[in-house]
Image (cartoon, rainbow, N blue to C red; front, side):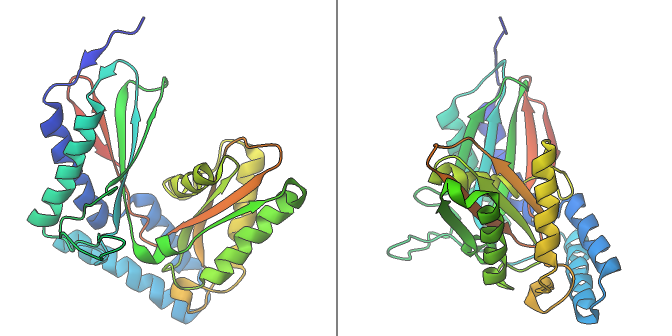
Length: 298
């Protein structure tokens, strides 16, 4: 039987992580995204698109030097939390501490608060509100720590979210057509080159969650199932062949990558969802161990 350790100073630790991760995710673009942008610029045949990609890389360099945001859109703060074995934590207190951390980040950095009431459009200037931050919490027997990934989701990319409850008879061809149709419909609005997340299966809400979760995967990291990995490459190449290009101005690179996550579904259903992340691919990760040690990464 696995022994369980209680995390020391948990609330202070998670509050500080909420603050740090929300800021760092918007300043420090992940290395896989930087590499993908550089590679796209190097192979781009369209002069204007090459210039746009170079400008994006320059914005990342400026953020590095000045420790400032790459984009003014601070997005919707989203946390993906996986709790491993052998570590005890008060879940409600953890989420509340992360929320306080987001509020501190907004006030102390300072950051533009992008969060408003859906009905009254009231802005508390805290980057929080009813249901925000968004928390996804799951459990895993494969790890012995708490894994926290922060994703600030900007409105341009989040607006380009699509769900269709296909029929089983539509098959894989229907899934491919829907993904390509949504990419064309989105055009330059999600600030391409994007990372396209595709969810296949599950219920309607799970399918959308899978699509968003897929955008967290590092660019270039393929799905472990070979047939799904091949589909990712096929869709990536097909979308890039549309010529939409960086910021929708034409070019060879409309997406940096396509990632797919799947779940089993009902015998009468064939759900597919698409969620896009803008060219910055913002995310920041922390691993919290039972002794209070914290590793920060991507």
